[in-house]
Structure formats: structure tokens, C-alpha cells
Image 1 (cartoon, rainbow, N blue to C red):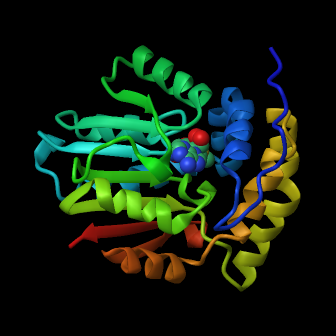
Image 2: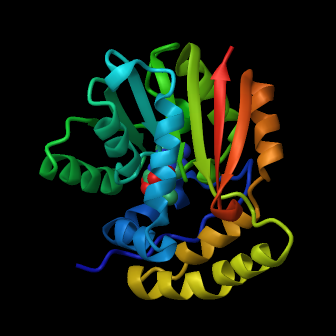
Image 3: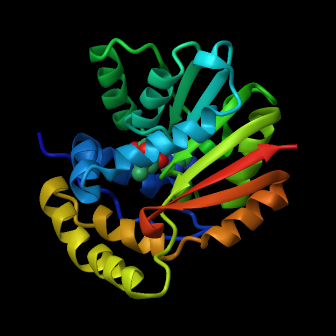
Length: 249
Ligand SMILES: C[S@@+](CC[C@H](N)C(=O)[O-])C[C@H]1O[C@@H](n2cnc3c(N)ncnc32)[C@H](O)[C@@H]1O
């Protein structure tokens, strides 16, 4: 079955009216999303999620027993599944506003017999009470939010005091030789592979453009501090990805 093309390519950056376009785009690429992740990152995305998992679970007890963890923008649930595999005692909930992505995540959880809960929800209006999670994670979803400050405020609201937020994202490539090579790959090669494999050229044009328009790690750390988090970040794979840790004071 061929997925319908998205209504239009979402605008990039902060304070944009893009929720519906983002939903349509991910609904359209959902069947090929996992395959493209592996191909386009040469499998390195798994090691980034593992590293982010270590940070996310660092403050929970052994096995994560009793901890409640929310993976926002969970998509096909790779991060949520990694969290549960690492901390079997934790309750892991994955939330996303695209049912087509969640359906693939549920099938993976079922076939691997991993007990996680995947439910629909908008990150900008999370359907959970205040202070209801010990840990919140978000991998490669934050960049797509229509309002970054609103997203951070929601993370802060549903996190309990002393809880931890971990955001894994693609920062814009740094200046210098590696940044230039990566920029070339991102703009010239990745969209072509993405178009062929997913059948959706727009989505894989949106991906590099949204990364180039995303705040650099220092600015994102500043936004997190302004929301009330104590923050630090680390760059992975020569700065292709970044892990931001925010602890709620
Ligand atoms: C690039 S995928 C990342 C999926 C997954 N976290 C991973 O690591 O592979 C981005 C996901 O963010 C979700 N998303 C974007 N904006 C959202 C929002 N406002 N509320 C909920 N989910 C959102 C999309 O539906 C999509 O599934």
C-alpha cells in the first residue's frame, strides 16, 4: 500500500503553525521510518539512544524499580523500548500525536514481548497531571514542536521536583571541515536516499532544513534554564547529535 503524500512540507523553526503538517508528514513516512533511521545514520542512532538512556536513568534505582518514565514524541517507540530493556522495573509510557507511528511501536513491543504503554498525546498539551513522572525523554521530536518554550514548560509541569529531562536532538552542524562535510551529506545526499526509500521527498528535505534552523546547543540550554532546569549537554559523534540533560530544581 502506498502512503498518501503529506499535505505540505512543514515550516521549520520555532513559533510556527506546523502541528498538522508534522502529523501528516510522519503518518506518511511511518512504514519506512525505522528503516530510514538505520540507513541514514548507518545504525549510529541506536548508540545515541543508548547513551541518552544511561543519562535518563542515572538517578533511578537499580532496574528503575518504581520509576515512572514518559518518552514524549516516542514515534515508533525505539527510545521507549530501550528504556524498558535497561530498566525493566520502571513504568514506561510513550506518547506521540501520530497514531500511525504508535501502531508500529506497539507491534514492535508486542513481538519483543516488552511491556510499555503507548498512547496518543500532543507534547504541547500533555494529557498528564502535574509532577507525575520521574523522568521525561524526547529523541528527535523536540525540533518538530511548533513552540519550543511551550514544550519545555509542559515537560517541566509533568516532571516531579528533582526529576530529570533528557532531550536527544540534531544540533545544526558546527563550522569547520566536519561540519561542512556533514552539511553536504545532509543537504545533498540524505534527501535523495530518503526520497527513494520513503517515497516522500518532502520529509527528507524537511529533516535537514529543520536541523539547520534549530537552536545551537548553547541556545537550547539557555531555553531550558529559562524554564527552570539545571542543564548540561554533551555532543555525540563529532557533534552530529547532542544530549541535553535538564534537572528540575
Ligand atoms: C523524528 S520522530 C522521532 C521518534 C522517536 N522519538 C525516535 O527516536 O525515533 C519525531 C516524532 O515526533 C512526533 N511529534 C512531533 N511533534 C509532536 C507533538 N507536538 N506532539 C507529539 N508528538 C510529536 C512525531 O509524530 C514523530 O513521531
